Length: 114
Length: 113
Image 1 (tube, rainbow over the protein chains, first blue to last red):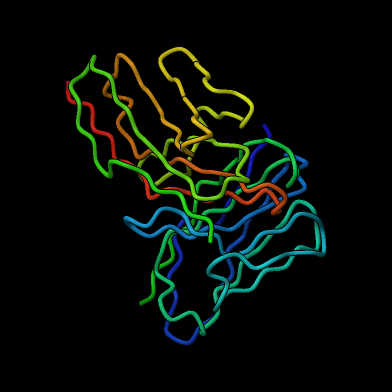
Image 2 (image 1 turned 45 degrees about the vertical axis):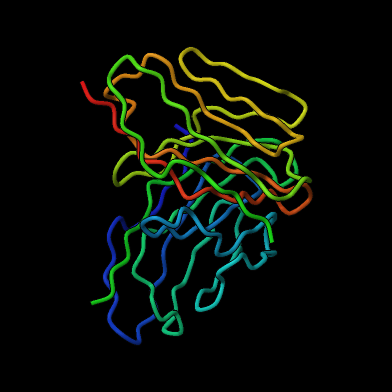
């Protein structure tokens, strides 16, 4: 079955620590996205990538970094510079960034600072 | 910048009644409008979408309408069932910006049996 897989489902981060969230898709989609979800604030875009080896900042990129070395993978690193990282993180993909296709979302990673 | 406003934030209906959720977008270049359903602890799932050259689209109990002039679009759910209870998000895609979606704040729908 084709889909998008996020891991881990739950992640705990200590103060000052970097953590990396995994996102893998086998849908042959070109475009991938990372969103952050906080209660009552909807989904806010962190980073997106339309093609391998290229990515752009979204609305709340500060304190985060990404890479896109393979079409299937778009990992997100939450760095120690992100002051309030506790949130639900969602990865999504779509066929490409120019057509009218909906996103396929992963099941999310819940990150908690301890 | 681009913005999508969604109302109401919570909605409670009796089973069998209809539910309507409304969204307004700011950028007239928006050309694609999907709706997502999110159950607790899960990722959102696409339930219906509409393109800017269409005024209405229906899929069984779910319909979406689009008014481009007013920059409004709405989700209509008829004959609601308890399993429709979830958080619903509207979104708008801006033309030529990498396919990124701007999401509304979400509506928590509760269907009481």
